[in-house]
Length: 267
Image 1 (tube, helix red, strand yellow):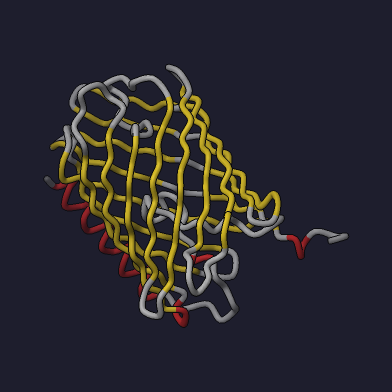
Image 2 (image 1 turned 30 degrees about the vertical axis):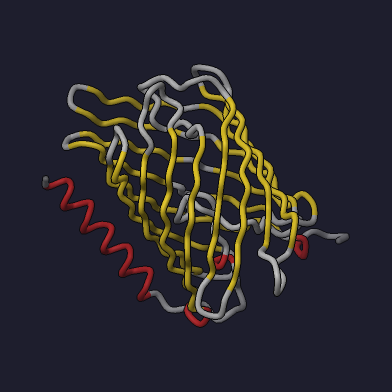
């Protein structure tokens, strides 16, 4: 109980700190992008700009599925704008389990993916993108996921819709972190450009890959803040309400752009 209260206090402190930080004075828009897991699972179809190399330093996720059971995951990633409207990603997820009588830290495998923006948003149509992800776990067979992404913008908010399906054999019961068999998510966000701040909410419905596992419903809220022209941070809080593994979920992320086209001689 004390650890749970301490986690809540920590989350509240982080949110307050992000809101109270002074806004940077230079133009910046990285806070405007919804990356997968930062701070929400739902994302928009906009890739990293061409020749930009983004280092996601601290994509940290904490789950508390039961009293005395904690699951941590950390996925450092690199994202590169390989071509116009095309982004490539590479990550190495780490996992840590802290439960009664069990503490385990392990490298869970390798992840890679491509994101391509098919259509720009227009007055009549949303922005649309597709993504393909591959996961090669340390144990077990690899999986491949196809995702469809859409974003529509209005003066007051943006609305996002994601749908994905994963090909691969059923996951073992002890692997709750693997991609689901399918997932549908909807999210809405609102931005405050003068403070370089985004706040969003989402709802997810998933079908896990574990045999006979029930569908899950997850609700979450998150915010993302730009600290300077190169660095953005985010924090999120969610609750898995239905399914065989209900849990509180806390996420924390930070990313920095380490190279852009304008910095490369000859371009």
